[in-house]
Image (cartoon, rainbow, N blue to C red; front, side, top):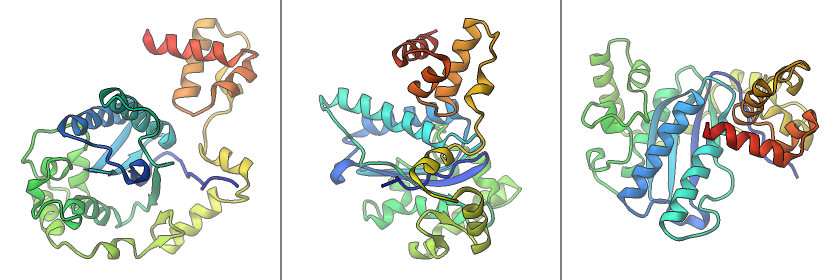
Length: 282
């Protein structure tokens, strides 16, 4: 049975959620929250993401991002993997921290962004963790309204631009919009097949372009729509230094496995692994 299709392309908008394994807490204390924000900041920088909103809850988190490159799965592997490793070491724990794969909903870039931002901001109130958003320190809300030091985990200018071109007016528009506290269900009225939030026309176009023939083989191919072929990375006359650089890029940016890269180059996957590790450490 194939896994659900992960649609990835340059400029895609996603609402992302990831939950603790078996409903367990993923954040035990303030230090855990801060460690996650540190990893989120690195992930955003490393993968060239635009972050519009985030909210960390005790047993799950929400993100609203744009991927300027088709690298959602790579970035999420970095974020959840690195945080799990640091959390397990800190709490002397082993095994999975997160429950299966993260969930991503593709969002149409036409009038839906504000609703998603509001939905994410209001999560602590809906969960009855606080009565006021000012009481919850682990979301982007206080940063966006200018009442907390910037974490670099949200692009405030980009978020406010969703509401108005003038930053001062946009901030008030944002505050007023969030304070409406509309029922959360209304945000998802146009959710299509559990994976696309947008108009029927947008959903049809996405399915037409990326969701044909959803066999196991095609699902894997479609996860990185538009990525270069391995043959494009490695000219036959290439020096070893350049080859190693391209090995790292193919693995890190475009999601090729070490086995796939090794098979293409006639190298054992363990050799590819060493090259990647050496490149990361240099």
